[in-house]
Length: 308
Image (tube, rainbow, N blue to C red):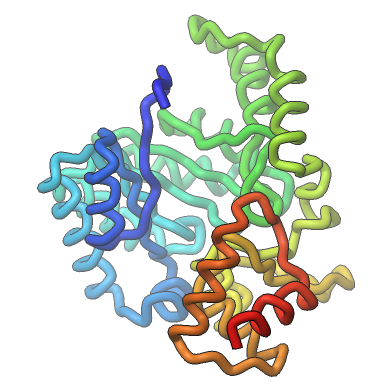
């Protein structure tokens, strides 16, 4: 699309994802790697040394491809601060153009994130981004505190769309920057916000109230492939607190974002044992329905029976 906005591809710290970004012919890639002890253990099964080596290798490879690189420390908020600083200085030396701090499960407070970003700002010369999830309803407050502490960029989405309770909403952040922080010269067109909100609700078939923190329908629904595969190993990897304490249950949603391991486990619970070829065929069928947000168990059974 011929947009005025700069485009960035978001992918894993892997050669295959970096190669895909290169093929797309865009300028930027954002690569991420889970850096907390939970991610190192349950997502990658690596120690700190192996973690650092993989991150450095990915950043250097992306730079060798001529891409501008934003490196994101996923679950940075639960990463040991001294180790996080090591990662930041490592990617800066490896050539990363920006460092992104992700509060992946939305577990920080404005005071805590202000301290962490202040410490990172002292150590890094490259711009710092923040990516705040809204599980406790503090994504906007945490994003603004980060700006106060030296962050040059905050991630937002229209209507706060995102995994579980989403991330900081565009409307809240920009109005706060304008009205409370007196940020000027951005030429924002605030009158577009209501129309933008309504249009995105229609396009996504998604009522923004469902991702309300704690009590919203989506608070414990997991969709993205890496999220769900980690949740199956240990729920704390992508949940700030267990749903049972408020009499809720987590749900793994099957749709175009689903990964192979998640689909395999879901079908196992439905008493289907498929070989890898069959699993990939079912997954490709699911991913072909790009506008379908959730496959019911009845629909999955029907789909599997068509290939058996």
